[in-house]
Every structure is written in structure tokens, then in C-alpha cells.
Image 1 (tube, helix red, strand yellow):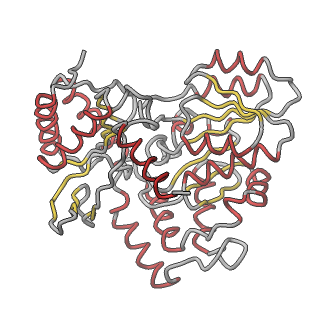
Image 2 (tube, one colour; image 1 turned 135 degrees about the horizontal axis):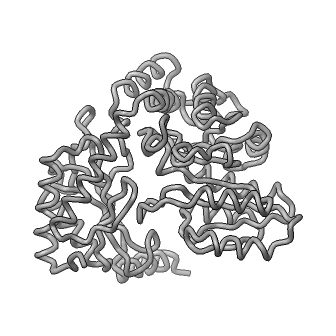
Length: 404
């Protein structure tokens, strides 16, 4: 059996489809976000500006966060020392969970090692704890949610994206006495659209279903305390489980869920992805705690972030570039071709020092490839002018599709 050949064929297939992913080795500059150093294979370096970071507010560079991490390192050391059950139930992670429960105005929270793990572990466990459960999932839900639904082993129904009517049509076909979970996101990170949370909650009430809301691309960014879109719209009390991340707006790493104590306790007690994983380190927990506390009390970052995103969308539209209309901070610039998308990304990095990763299948459907731009409060007017000019040049050089 030629195993190496099988792996080589798998990689060759990705390259043939022009969607082989290349990782750029970066060194972010502490205190100078979004500047970074690109390290090349020949040992040389290049100064670049990052335009696709999920550190949406630059909190990974915030003085309060860095100071909390330094102090925690001196106080607790580097690692957690084990799983939550085996010496890893650190003071820092317990404080972080209490802070997250308060953020979402619910009884309890549970921290995981990543947002992917929190979705996978929670959804898969829900399906196993609710006999005969049916999970109804938005067709554009994140891969972590899809995996969680699959791993649950229960019946699933996929409803059209953000379509309350299609969701209701599917709910009508399920026996009233069967457990049901409606799983959806608030902000969808590729198109930048927002789900009809109220309408979905109304349907959950009508058909006696639980609601599971992924606020990964909204926590820290929306709502008066950064609780997400559900907080902004006054709907947090209607969501059974809110899932979020510490690795985007909060600038560190980790994932979490918040819910009633009995739900969190059940997930804590049954989810393999939680039970058998080493706890998030006290160092990262302390950084996340500082970030959550800061953003609960500061609106400055959120206001500036929204203004910067709106400004960039306007500049790109005025330049005739095909920016997809978005009601959030996500700025999708459409290319519609995998190979050209990769070429545009490479050209921006190599020739202009501007780093924007290409987005292609399976993250988005084939034919809807794009550059996903995420401006932050630290991308100033000069940086935006530089980016707009470079994009116009690249679009001209590659003869890419202009805005309609």
C-alpha cells in the first residue's frame, strides 16, 4: 500500500482546483497593530499591514490585556496543569466564567479551548442528552456547528439561510413532543449579514424548541456592553444557549457558552470535548478576563470600529470595486474565481505589503471567492487610501470584475 502517494494525490487535487492554502509566517508588532513582519523561506523579511485579522478591535495589543497576562504569568506560571477535573480548575478560569455569565446576563458560563470546540462539543452533547432530538441548522452555519450537529448523531434539518418561513415549514413537520434545537449565528462572517433573531425566537416559542445562537463574530462588538447582537436587540433572555469566542473581538484565545446553570452543568458533565482537554491556561484566561471587563465598560472601540468599516466600504464603492453590501463590520470584496483570488492576494502581499487572505471553497461556495477585509480601529485614513489604491491597481492588472 503506497500511503504517501495517497496523501500526495489529495494535495495535488487541492492544487488542481486552485484552492491549496498557503500559510504566511507572521510576527505581529506588539503595540503597533496592525503592523507585522512577514518571514520568508529565504530568511528575508518584509514589513506588512494586516487587513484580515479577526482581532477586530486590536484587543490582543491592549495594555490592560498585556499587563494581565504578565501578572498572571508571574503569579501562576504558564500552564493550567491539567483538565478541569484534574488540577486544572484555576482561579482565573473560574473568574472568567463568572464574568462571561454576567456579560450575557445568565446563570452560568463554560470556557473551552476554542470556539470550534465549544460549538462541536456543545451541539454534539445536546443531541445525545435530548432523546429523539431534531437539530434545525441554518445552511450557512460555521463548520464547527456542522460538525457538532453531525457528531450528535441525531436527526437534522437544514433550513435556508436566515429564512424564517422555511424554518417554520420544517418545524411544522416535527412531532410537538420531540425535542428541537434551532441553531444559527448572529453575524455571518463571510457576507456580513445578520440573522432574524427575534423571528427565530418567536418560532422557538411557538413550536417549543430550544435556541442555540453563535455570537462568535459579534461578542465584544455589538450591544452596550459587548454582549453581541442579541444584547443590542434586547433578546438575550430569549436565547437558551449563547456561544462565543475569546479569540476575535476579545483578542486572546478560547471559546465559551453561557446558559442556565442546569444546561451548563449538563454540558460540563457529558461533553468529551470539555472533559478530556487540558484547561485554557491561567495566562490566557487572565488576558481574556481583562479584555471582557474593559469592553463591558468602554464603547470607544466599538464606535470607532463601526466608523472605520463604514469608511472603507464607502472608499471601495467609490473606487468602483465590487464590495458586497454588508450591515456589519465585515467587508467582502468579490473576485468570483479561486485562481484569480489567490493571485490578487499574492500580488497585494508581494508588491504592496498588504496582507489579505483569499477566501475560497469550502468556506464559501465555488464561484463566490472573495477577499474578506476586516478593518479595525487602528487602520487609519492613510492605510485605507493605500489599500484602495493597491486594490484598484490589482483589479486592473488582473482584469477582474468591477462593481456592477
